[in-house]
Length: 489
Image (cartoon, rainbow, N blue to C red; front, side, top):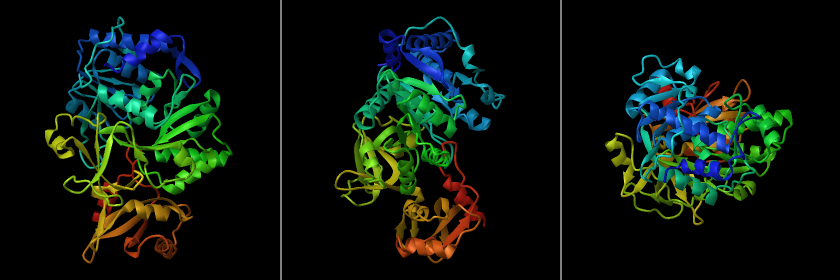
């Protein structure tokens, strides 16, 4: 089934229902949104694009994003959403690797793309006679997602129509309910999780709101939530923290927010507890990867609100099997730390034009996530770290997240990232990069704080004060940059 059938269905059955807004301004009802997407699809066909061709979307968050995304699918094309903050050379590499036939770019993004091989056009330039929905098989490619590439060239994750359907149904079964009275707010990049979650909200006929700022403006988010009510949004942990800090400073309680689904990076216990104190029972956690988009585990609203299992990422979602395995992929007992493995219709068939990486990552049908974790007897998964981030000091495994969690409970610590540094004595030693809340850090006090909470061998051997941590365009800390800094010192 072509996933765009869900939009066509809403246009047929609830055509006059409100669908798309730019800020508080109505842009289209469901019939209008479908008509615009079908005209976009017609424009692609006029330019000679065929089913299966790749169309890159190098666009900032804007209502036209949904028009282009669903227009690609109506035409049977493959959408290649590209992070709007990437450098032009990075985008050029993705366009070449994807074999893109066309790149749709908004003004600021188009200016960074001189000399790319494929044609570049603004979204409003792609229009034609309305095209009927092109049938697609469940295994046909729908979305080509390029990983963030913090350890080298990004890889193209092949996401099929079946995967998008399974992801959306798993959301309804394992994450949250959605109805026509609800509103989804696109503050996070639509090239990533926020855009993927458009599907379930189209399926259920909800309203879609793109902030006028196109991004994360905490005041604007809270204003739009109060205006529309029953607002859902996907947010990275850094976004939740910004929203919490703003609301606390402005004495706002988040009226109108119904659900904030957070994921895409580690949410530290201290941060989610602070957010709960400000906003109340609106939070749900998910854990996923591009290779199994948005749908490996979820920590329910009830668990988060009860502050139960906050150090975990929840239980397996409905569409997957979940295992923690040893180096050979054999299942480990509860409590044992190993690699997180996933199997099901939500798992990618492989990487685009990269058989070697596919063979390394997909083994006997299981996705080897590269993340380390452990399951408890009730099925809650505790995420430790990426396997490459584990520090082996004196023969003991140190999981940076555990050290980070301990340091973040200190009143003087704003942000922290822990990495390993080569050591002649220990093999590796633990180093903490710390963003202080004040001007200086009391290192003996931090030592004492850690020793009261974690084993002595896990305590950082050094604390390095920084003004900010290096992050990629999705807000994830780039630990490779921190390791490079250590190697140069």
